[in-house]
Image 1 (cartoon, rainbow, N blue to C red):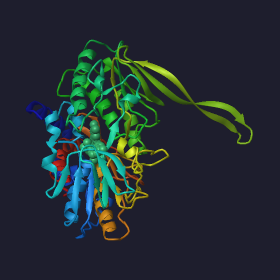
Image 2: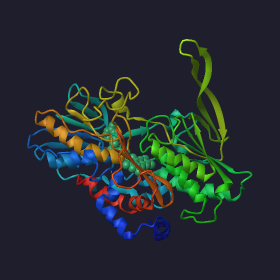
Image 3: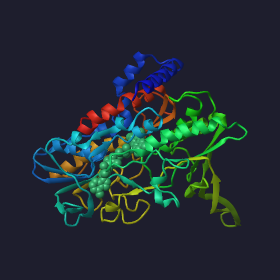
Length: 496
Ligand SMILES: Cc1cc2nc3c(=O)[nH]c(=O)nc-3n(C[C@H](O)[C@H](O)[C@H](O)COP(=O)(O)OP(=O)(O)OC[C@H]3O[C@@H](n4cnc5c(N)ncnc54)[C@H](O)[C@@H]3O)c2cc1C
């Protein structure tokens, strides 16, 4: 982060601190309670982290981990310590490790790409053999994986940590190459293999272009900006809205670009197929109120982006809605008929969140669910993270076909459960550690404020005695300044 951006951010926080009436002393107390750690699901008060027993074993066995992102590196660090006599092999193609949550701060003009990168070799735990390759086929019936360059590799235990893949092409006319062109951006775009995070850089440029274009408009002829969310599961479910609110706030003059408040010169439309901004009621209410208060954001529910004409700046949607049908004499109510029709929306700028899917190697193998809504994602038990059929196979991170979030915070909570359960099976016991569904979404509602939405399978799961549905400057400060060093130095080392 350069000095100008740092100064801007500190000024914003000082200002908000005064408004909130929270002193530095109170802020430090909260930090003592777990503070920033919670944003990656590391708060000591959280149930699954607190109950994890941290088992270990001196048995000899070969553990293969597939994937070298957040989940794979955490699993390697934990298992290296827990199973000192095991041979641990990590198969991952990527030389560079990206701190992906930082892509949103890149989009906001507060981080650069260099700020979120580290060589994977710096993170690889001592004593873990790194095979720089990609798995093409999983063959769990024979306890082996087949790689692109190193042939077959066998295992006694397997950890699947491949993350997910983007599916821009599912939107007709869209491709990753269009990001950064013709008014299109997408904060998600990254290439872990190449170690680039183009989505962050392109979205900051997009912010600048939006501002320059809005300066030439007025409230009678506002700039039309669309922000989309796809109907598939996505990682960091809050990121589509983070871009929406930050871009709006940028037009109010609150970004490092500064400038006067010109937000009336732009109209934002947030499109998603579902009918809520957030699945948990209290968080949803905060966000609905926010969009109303902002005045220039319209929520378009029922809209699923299916096509884009980049030259004409036209988006095509499947619009899902309900129509009143015939009167049902038996039920004594009108039939409700689900309807779909194609609609088009013209835009000046569009932020596209790609549909996401399981990586092909998992989806096309017996490791993935073979049917149902989670088809293709890893067929794991939602509590033990063990494969439903292959008892020596476990999963961590975004690839898991289980309910709720795909976040680094969830992966952090998978870590101790995976460790305990894999070690239990190594020792010939039943896996008993349970993942509680913990997910955390640090939703940036403006420059300088975050609503820290924590929840699990049972509903909201706040780690602090503060109303979690209220956006606060303190979560912004922790996210911006503390979380990244904690990610590199503690989480990736299996220390929390
Ligand atoms: C824009 C954005 C914002 C985000 N914000 C947040 C946030 O605020 N908070 C939060 O907690 N999380 C956030 N996340 C989500 C978080 O980054 C992911 O949930 C986390 O990285 C998941 O870890 P993972 O190991 O499952 O996948 P990844 O970290 O994506 O790693 C998967 C790895 O597997 C490798 N791989 C894939 N296929 C194969 C194969 N066949 N063989 C071998 N290796 C393979 C890939 O190269 C990659 O390195 C955000 C993500 C993005 C993109």
